[in-house]
Image: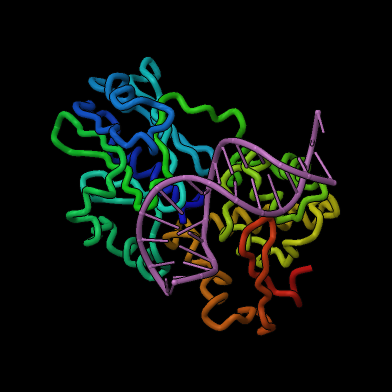
Length: 276
DNA sequence: AGCATTGTTTCACA
DNA sequence: TTGTGAAACAATGC
């Protein structure tokens, strides 16, 4: 589930709990998660270094070492990854209820994390004995050295209104596919897209190039608001539409039956009455 | 048992 | 050349 809000929570966790700690041991044995690196390459590059800054664009994170003197460590949570540092975690909440619990608990203790070493796909063990773990049941997360982020568009939470209109408001592709294209705009995933389009009352299937300036501005505000709320409430799953779509299948605002279809190759829910 | 799944990359084809 | 859509990737959940 990690989309921009979950990744931002993971980045903040790293910034809060992992910086200024010397790396002693690195487990990079999972060659799929660490592809294209060979086992030992990340360990050789990172051992003895200290993490000094945690950054993010969209769903991609990179952590600097030794004030930028050392290699950077790229981290991606993929479809189901989370970051765990000394037992605290962020990323991939499995449900809205669990996300709320995690926020209320503050320290985020998670019973599922005890005794599941098989799902620790990449580990930094610090000299003080603590550890940072990329925990990922589905193994689609990544840990790489010096990640190439040049193909990413501006972060969805930071982009200016003019830049947003210029980048999103063009092309024949469905609007939803356009805002999920990470080279156009970085950070919007399947659930955040549905929620933001519903809030903006815009149809996911309209051609992106057809939107006028007012509609594009409205969509940008909806993406920002949805992102902000998701960070505050504990994740994308706390979205209003997201919580209603399977439960009763009706629009939470007007009560019309929601439509379920495929847009841009992804399952999409929307209100045919309000989203035009 | 079969289908769906939050993400990204690759490839076929317009 | 651009850009769209499907399939593959790994593994789990319903």
